[in-house]
Length: 247
Image (cartoon, rainbow, N blue to C red):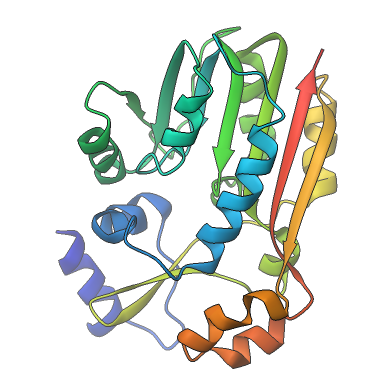
């Protein structure tokens, strides 16, 4: 069904010169089978680096943790090393969650309806994690309220994502499938906007990490014959991460 939809949109009569981006659920269901097999994916490499730096600053032992946009559980081995008492993954893609369950059969996962407000409960979690997800969310005002309401009084939020400056300059989240490049819908939420929204809920910034396109990552673009893209984004931030706490 998904493959047929993909071919219709890219090759069929409904295809247009400027093909629209795919919704997150559709795109990640298509991507799920190959998502973990990306040895030369710069964005995932930078995300893992930023996530690791920030995660070390959270005392997660014995904590209840929500992972919003958990995908295939790419970060779960590292999260579980910090000994949370429980870890729940939330994602819009049933196929990404299925991949996670193959690696962690006992995992507690929840399929999100991307068109409805996420209901997490009140004062359930100590830590909320969200990696490479924020820019897929249209209404961050609503999401911030839901996320922060789910957290106990003293709590932490760790976010990583594509940098809003890169998205504003035309950056896209894409992957290759069946010979086609698939792009996913993104929304630009500036860091200042996010800090304001979380600040209104009592959360303060503890740490901010940014990673830039520079000579150290040029080889990623060379391998993909994408040097024009490298030069377009050179010296620009590509990935960010923030740690926020409420004390």
